[in-house]
Amino acid sequence: MASIAIPSVLPGCLRERSFAYLMVGQASSIIGDAISMIALPFAILAMGGSVGQVGLVLAARAVPNALFLLVGGVWADRLPRRLVMLASDLVRGVLMLLVFGALVTGVGGFWILVVLMALYGVGEAFFRPALSGVIPQTVSPARLQEAYGLLATTPALGIAVGGAIGGLLVALISPAGAIAFDAATFGVSAICLWRMQTRGEPAPWRNRDFRGDLKEGWEAFSSRSWLVVVVIGEVLYAVFVMPSIYAVGPAIADTELGGSSAWAAIISGFGVGFLVGGLTAMRLRPHRPLVLSYILCIPFAGFFLLLALAPAIWILVGGAIMAGAVISISGTLLETTITREVHQDLRSRVGSFRTLGSVAMLPVGMALVGPITGWIGTTGAVLLGFVAVLVNVAIVLGTPSVRRLTATYSVEGAEPPAADPVAGPAETPA
Image (cartoon, rainbow, N blue to C red; front, side, top):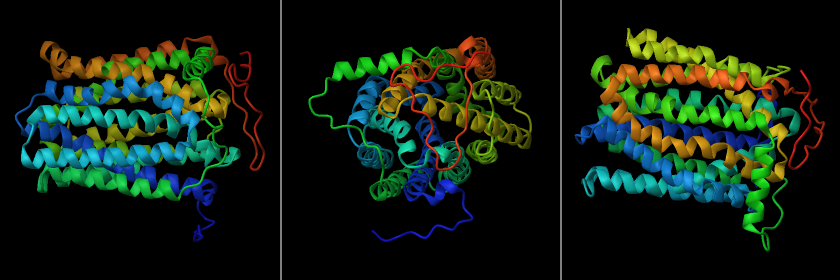
């Protein structure tokens, strides 16, 4: 394989070739995701669809994701995670090409989008657990938080660049053209994964008991009370917060802010915030990372107040920058904590249980967004998201094990203490 000269001025994690490939692949994929999340709602609205139908298409993606997520977690702990991710990228790229074809030809109408996005959700169910386990296999332990912080900036590139491209493609060409661009980004990600190398691959999967593997993953997840309560809070996000952003937000932009270009500007503001937050998180070393992570969610709630008021677009963009920054820092601290506290052989299964609650409830939230907006309007639905964020913060910070969990930071080149495969390291008393 040809060597890659990586400048020494770059962050240390990028001087590790495998992580550099992962970074480029994820940046490409997130650009595509941002484009499709703008294009797909406007494609449905252009077909004469409603906010409720936008929610149903997004729910169609989430239902099989939830059904197959635990299966994906088990197999990602059995097989080389890089290959699981590669297969998922190829499948999802083909599916987005089929979505493009359906929009261009008009074949199948609304329901073919539901079917294709359901198949997309199956592919995604295998990718996400594999990603949660593969990151520590691409970077040295001392650079782990730096790596997560840098990965947290990829939404900045993805949302800012993808949001701008998506808005332009929707406005100047069509939502279908934007979807075709998204399909191409999966090809870029797949090439990066093909070139990437990982260490510490799972033990051979032959003759392993699926139910036993699943049980072991459940025990590793449920024994960590701080992680269980984090998932409970994420369920609230799935039901009330995410629909407010992805389904109600475009509708508000369409009726009160000038259409897709305004929503693209807001999404790009989130991207700038993710960049600022990710770069900041690379250097943070908090003693109690989960406490800081959830305190930072409080300013995020303010964005929903702004969206409900629908003020001048520049105010909303400023609020999106603030929200993106604090969520980026919060997410980096949370993901780094989970990786440190969970043994590498269990990370994909624990990750799948961690993700299952929010993924399983996202279809509920998307299905409810139509009735909720019909009952209390788009403004009321956004305010419901505001309340859900604050309730999430209160639940998590009110849990003693969250406040007791502390972090130690290894020096470069040093291996951290190995976590117990099930229980993990003991929590430090407050």
